[in-house]
Length: 118
Picture 1: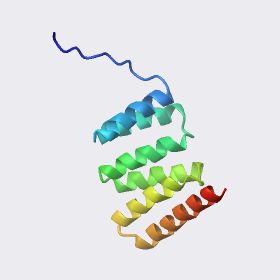
Picture 2 (picture 1 turned 180 degrees about the vertical axis):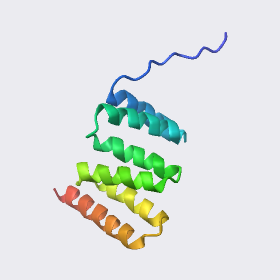
Picture 3 (picture 1 turned 60 degrees about the vertical axis):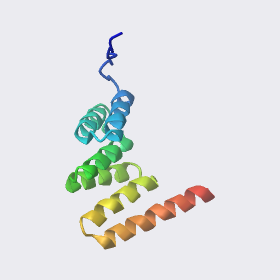
Picture 4 (picture 1 turned 135 degrees about the horizontal axis):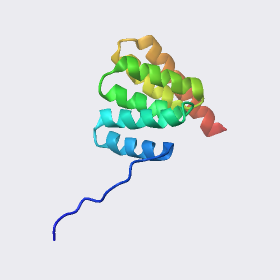
């Protein structure tokens, strides 16, 4: 019996592009993940998680300016998402900005504590 590849339809909505982008990202295919997150953001340009995940993929391929731009936008859209600050802190560390990294780590921790107490 020959192996047959299952045909997967092209995504048509934000959830579909995000899901496929996550699969690409988990498998280290970050440029394709970026493409799918971008397509999701073209459909919904106010989707904070799209910017966050695209920023994470940019970080993985060391496009730190692009990563910061996306993470800044994600934080602008959802300033209460602690993981956004945590990821941006990593970018700041890798771009030799320890003061900004520390501030984001503190904000991340503050938001996590508030969420637990909330």
